[in-house]
Every structure is written in structure tokens, then in C-alpha cells.
Length: 429
Image (cartoon, rainbow, N blue to C red; front, side):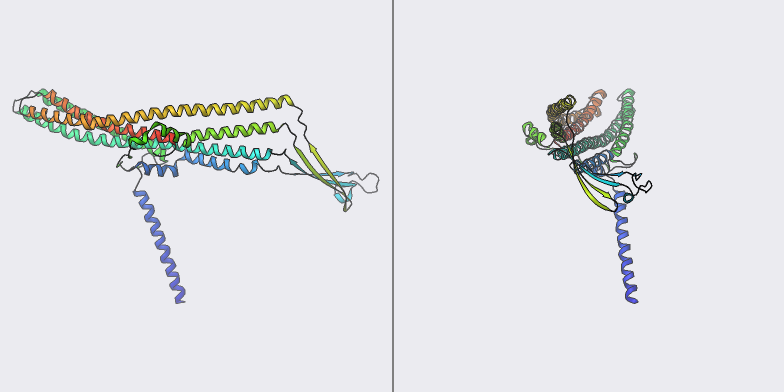
């Protein structure tokens, strides 16, 4: 009895530990929302995005069609009751097989012409591959939107931080103007202009907060989370690839080999080719093979064998279906060619865009910002010592703000262009 009690306590303790660890894990998931990195958003969306889930279910359904497409049709069982009125005998009408003249049982199995079943299975395989590739196209589009939204989230967060820093800077300028105005060294207009700049920047902060809220709602929609659910502040942007990995010729080869849209188009061509071959096979007849035992009384005393085939006489309609199949194949090939041309154009445009964004970022960080800071310090020193005017000081301050915002915007544009390239490649760089 003590051993049983001890075992029960051990099991209860193990269950309590399991429940506690599950609760801790759930609390950790609740307390740590995604958003710190683009990868966290992508991992969450891959599991929860409804559009991608729907396409995965479609792909699963298409895969289940492969087996039935190559299977034989179901056989047919036919029962014929002959002489149910029992004419020529003393018995009355009856529907029981052993009490009428005879009963014929016919089992019929349809048999398609040789090769048709294989072609139907290959058509289903190609269509399943096409649906699977479309699911990857859907994911590539979702991933692009998430990566771009994360970069924009980072940009808005940095812009808010920069605006707050600039606001502190402007507040300091306002205090300097008030001090000098109180000493009678500058006109009141300097103080008013500083206050106007501070008010305008606070208005910009309000707009940034509104944009931040809208962007979070858009991200949560992609993640299938409540609209107002919190997101972690973005810690960093994704690392950009080195310039040697942005070679157009190498990326073109990767695009042609990996792009899910081209893969879907190729699967569409394969399905159209198999459909065309299957249409040409309709020139040949399909068969039905049947076997029929005949019952008289309580015993089977006769067997019949049946062979049936359809006669392909309607050549006009058949030729029309063949021409339709050829046209559909040509259309599938044209669609792939058009998609390839468009994708290569988008690749070239995105490469040019990322190169331009990186050059603008380097220009803003390496030249514009240092020059603006030197100009601001000189203007501030001159204003404090009565050798400069307030307009020059404000203009120098605006140049610092513009350089910092331009650098952040260029980084965001580069991230968006990188996401576009990765969508085209169907994989991360």
C-alpha cells in the first residue's frame, strides 16, 4: 500500500512539473511577442498566416488527387431478372432469383486504352507540383511584405528617436535664444521662430506615432494577431550581402533555378504537355470487360464473357479538342516566357535600387552628416557669441536632421530592395 501511495505521489509530482513547464513556456510566448527581428516575424507568419495556410492545404489536396487519377474506374455490377412472371410454369410472379426463369449477374470493369492511366497520373502530378509552387509564390509575397514592414518599423522607430533627439536640440536652441533675448542681444523673432520649430517637430512626432500604430496593425494582420497586439521594438536590420553577391549574371541563374513562379509555370507546361498527349490518346477506343454467371434455380449453370469498346467516330469534335490542347500548351509556354522576362526586369530594377540606396546611405553618413554637424557647431558658436544670425543656425540644424533621416531612409530602401530580390530568387541571399 505504501509503495502504491509513493508511486501515485511520484506521478502526481511529475504531472505537476509538466504542467508548470507548459505554463512557463506559454507565459514566455505571451510575454515575448515577435518583432525584434525580421526572422521572428517570418517564423510566426509561417505558422499562422491564413493565406499561406490555405495554399498549403490546396497543395495537400492536389497531392491526394495523384493516386485516384491513375486508378482503374470502379467496376459495375448489373443484375438481370428474366421471366419474373414464370410464364410456362405453374408458379406465380416472383422477384427471388431462385424462383424465376433465370438470373444473370454481370460484372463489368472499364479498361482505358494503354497509357491513358499513366498520363492521367502524370497530369495530376504536374498539377500538384504547380499548386505547391503557387504556395511558395504566396509565401514569397508574404515574406516580402513582412521584411519590408519590419524595415519600415525600424525606420519609424529610428525616426521617432531622431525626432526626440532633435527636439532636445531645438529646446536647447530655444533656451539660448530666450537667454540672449532677455539680455537684449537678439530680437524676439528668434525666440518665436525657435518655438515654431519646436511645435512643428512635436507635430511630426504625433504623425510618426500614428504611422507607427498603422504599421503595427498591418504587421499584426500579416501575422494573424489581434490588430492592437504589441510588437517588440526592432533591434536591428537584416545584414546586407556584400557587393560581390549582387552580381546580375549569378542572380539570374539562381532566379531561373529557384524562382517559385517560374517553377509553377514549368509545372503548368508539363501538365499541358501531358494533357495534349492524353487528348491524342482519345483517338483509340476504351474497353469494358465483363463476366456474367447465369443462375437457374439454385445453381449456376451457364457463364458469359463480354468485351465492349467505344468507337471514336466523332472526329470533328476530337480534332477540336486536340487543337485546344495544343493552344493551351502554347499559352503555358508563352506565360512562362513572359514571367521570366518580367522577373529579370524586376531583378535588374531591384539591383539598381539597392546599389543606389547603399550609395545614398554612404553619402549621408560619410559626408552629409559630418559636414552638417561641423556647420551646426560653427553656427551655434557664432550665434552664442553674437557673430551669427538665427536663420543660419536653424538651417544648420535642419541639415543635420535631413542627413540623419536620409541615412535611415536609405537603409530602409536597401532592405526593401533586398527583400524584393529574395522574393525573386525564392530564397534568402
